[in-house]
Image (cartoon, rainbow, N blue to C red):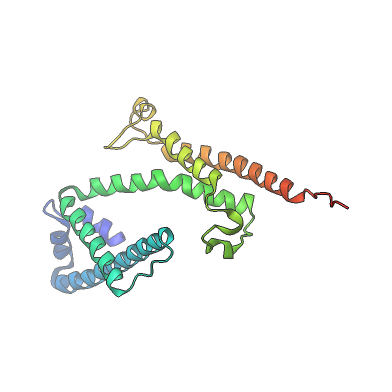
Length: 217
């Protein structure tokens, strides 16, 4: 990263690769080969993780499906095709497109992270029934965590007025001169909302479990 920042500052307007070759002088071919191998390894790992996540998602929807080598290869090739298409289409304005993509991830990951942290540290204190995670009916947690899903949607919606991006700028962000405060709002709203809803649901479950029905004689 330090090398990349230095090259970006020192490279001429022609391009980063030309700037790197100029800065490294006699060893430029070796440097480019090392970088190419490193990038290839990182991309292979990214493709592997993407394919694995896609297959896992598919098995969640269709538990009886067991993807074999052909299915795994097909998923990897499709994802690779999407990645190549995105790379070619965004090559002329890569940094701008990448920034928009990172912001999009921020909008959807902030409420997700808030819910997970609150649930782990404040609601369940790290105590989970792991076996229930692998049951089709959700085990003791059920198929859908209504509080988590509702608060996640709420966390995304409350961010919209504060979003400042090329695709969309909310009214509050526009009034602030393009300052994006969406992630702060999403975190501040989602965390207490989920804590209140989850604790309320847990109190109801505990109350129901403590009821003792009289035994008829």
